[in-house]
Length: 233
Image (cartoon, rainbow, N blue to C red; front, side, top):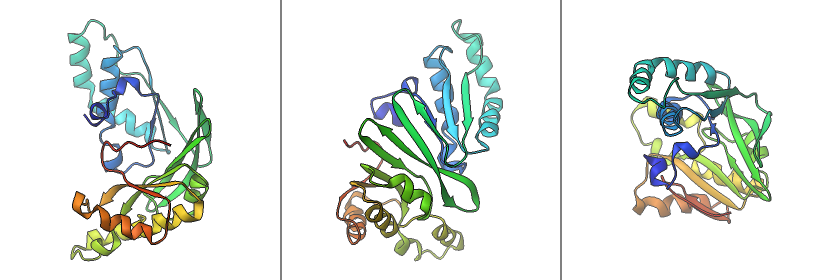
């Protein structure tokens, strides 16, 4: 539904890039796989790139969907087999091409989740770093170096620290906070800093607070990447 809201559909995906195997980053993958399969009438494979473990995860998702897949094959003459997926496990530092797009990877740090990947996507003169959940590290600096946009999941440390829940405190040691993301953006010399996957989720009225924290360290464009945010580079 988020893809439809962005005026696109799973059918048009060239590939899916997975940073790590935390549930909030992968549990919608089953719907992407099945919707892509149905819309392509079973004719187009879906490429899925991710860290070691992604092959097993996808295989288990397909096993869990066996009943649904069977129902749809029985109902639609055009569907004669299950979803076609090409799952590629990547080690940090590996790169690949998707048509005229070059994608490179580097290790990020989200322990105890291992390994985790960040991606740098380059097309002609444009470049974007997508790094997922991570603390500042060398891999993020490498991916973001001089990028047109650096997309970082972030937390508000000052707000999380107010929680009386010890499990909430646990997230502090493996996510970048807003100021750390801004420091990385400045150090890497990026043009745009895009903050996303924001925790705790801010209201629109709170957006200026998040921007002000980042502005203390970064003087480029700052974008709060709520769902369906679009920008040009």
